[in-house]
Amino acid sequence: MKKEFVTNNSKFVYSKNELGYQEVLDDFENASEITIITYNISEKKLALVSALRKAGERCTINIITNIPSRWEVYYGDTFRGKAKQKINLYLSKLRPDSLGINSKVFFDFSNHGKIIMTDHVVYVGSANYSEESANNTEFGFISRDKEFIDYISSEVLPDIQAAAIPYYEYDYTSLLLEANVALSAIYNIKNELYEEVYRLHDDVDGEWYYYVEHEASLTVGTLDKVVQIVNEACEIASDIYDAIDTITNSDEYATTEANDIYEELLTLSSRIEEVRGFDTLIELSQFDSEEYVNRQLQEEYAMEAYEDNLENCIDLASDEAMNIVWDLTQAAKEDVDELIEDLQKFCKVYSSIIEKLREKEIKKVSSEIDNT
Image (cartoon, rainbow, N blue to C red; front, side, top):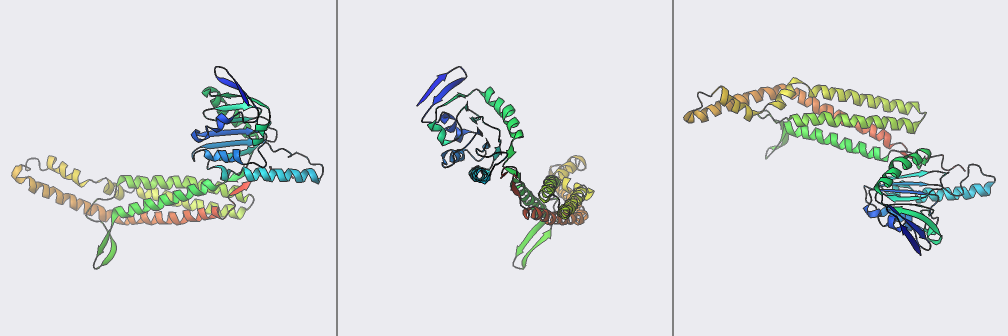
């Protein structure tokens, strides 16, 4: 049974033998954000926790719950054992990894409020996010008022989260993934750079790469991407160092080791940026043979490039461009090779700092949750 009273911006819901916030549950698959604030969840049933998986991968899920039977002080092993059992149940059912990629779970041991909400519709009332609430007489309001929903998201939710204990004291799973993506990007740009200036010879006499001497194939875009990707990777490496520092806590040796690797990355990054700025690379990457030929025809051969002599003038200008390219590629080869070598070194060192993080316990359940 459910009774409703509709006002301009919301409706009053009186429910029994069914959930008063079913309208919110029905919106989970359309939501970009789901917020659950509850006093408790069901101990034995899984339907409501499973309902969160209807949300898309990009949906942010915020859960804040109390844990009934958990007390600040326990008078006897019976109460302590009951609390530990309940805490383990909540930790098991609300593990963020199992709820979704963008799930955040918090515990507020003073909370008794109830809000079930998406970015489209909100329920505020007496019912918990628990199947058992369907058996109770519950009262609440449902609203689709965007301004009200935004107020809860921007003002209420952050305030409650700030006072709550997060499920994980730290969780660097996403950082590890981000670092591996960055490493892949460095490998890719190194290969892209190599393939711009080296070509594969594949013939009956064998297979090898040779340096391109008669074509200005090096591009400004690739050189700029090298610096950009390396700088972005260094920012992630800084986060990795901070993570290792947090994980290892007082282990000075581990922190020093990570710091040494990070400093080596910064040194390589500075060197890569320096080499990218060498005149040899700038001049080669900016030279355009076609543009040069057209300019020569307009400026140097303007009086000679009449109809019968045009082809001859084009050949002369093209030969000049080819000679310039030859000079530029010869002058740049050593610096190009150094840049490629530095990128290879950067990849190797970057792999080592990722491995240092991978060796650690990259996620840890907050020690404050289980106080038994």
